[in-house]
Length: 79
Image (cartoon, rainbow, N blue to C red; front, top):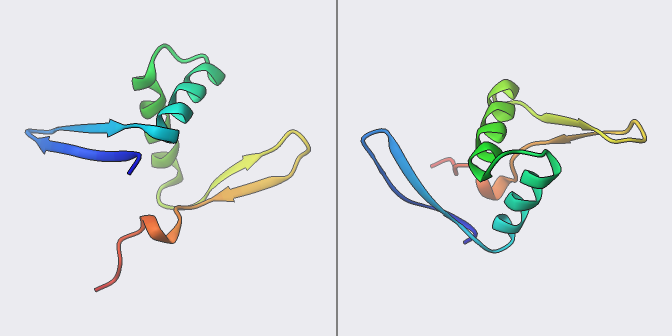
């Protein structure tokens, strides 16, 4: 699994990021000219927080709009 929460206690969580997700994290850092990988995560949290549980829309250079939502496999399963 490329992203895995290792621990969470006292308001602090530690994650392991590897494989393709680590490559993507570093690529995004460069594409957005961010200081470090922490800022990629902060930026992503800000974008998703602003979406308030809805889709995140991205407008491509050609003007087309793509909406992103979590894949079903990432969502909690109804019990």
